[in-house]
Length: 102
Image (cartoon, one colour):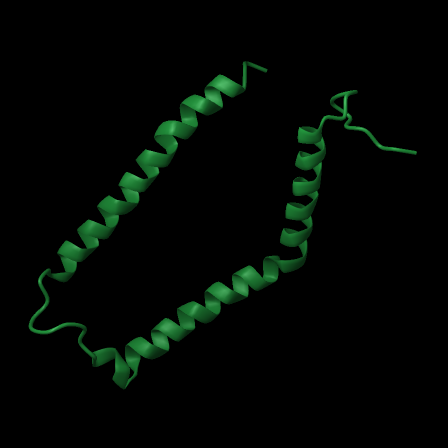
């Protein structure tokens, strides 16, 4: 017996693809979620080990740094905020447009 979508009687290729990808996403996250967390922890430990070892003193480039630490922090922060504004500036109106009041 074939199973159909519970929210529609028609089985269109788009609905079939959506079901397949949602199933794959769920299974990958269920099976490998521990790996994603462990990978980030391994990278964080690796960065700290490099930072506090003798290799942490290696300078990149020639001469003194062009920007101070607070300037670098401000640049990274403004890039992060700009990325959020860029993404959510498009996503939020589309969210309101595609989801009517339910």
